[in-house]
Image (cartoon, rainbow, N blue to C red; front, side, top):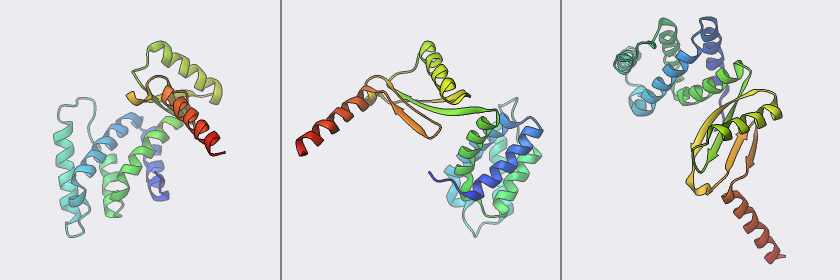
Length: 187
């Protein structure tokens, strides 16, 4: 996914405020809720015939309903203002991009690095520690893992970080052997 300049400007502004008021993690949760609302109700939220006030009223009601059982997280005036600005400027279609950008920007603002780990099974504590040490040695920053299970890998992992991908899975090795064999047969 290519991220827009528009989305990054909104994210940078919100992240600066979130850091100032120590609400970085809280806003990430609120962003996930907002993205869920947008994903499920995008036809209504993008409808130009619906009034802005009606959309904002709907979002506020939905947030209250979704967060009513959450004791530590509530939508505050700052995040409500952020939503108003996004919708007033008709930038709501960028909400999914903003959520992803916010997540990564929040991680990087703490001098950490997001690392996507795809494995055939859930990683053990020892395996996570080993991967953490490897990433730290490579980029000199503490990793924040986003784990994904893909049983088709058979065994091993695929690691993505710092614009690089390292495939040490059985599936990846078998595909590489297959490509080499195929290229030998052509030549």
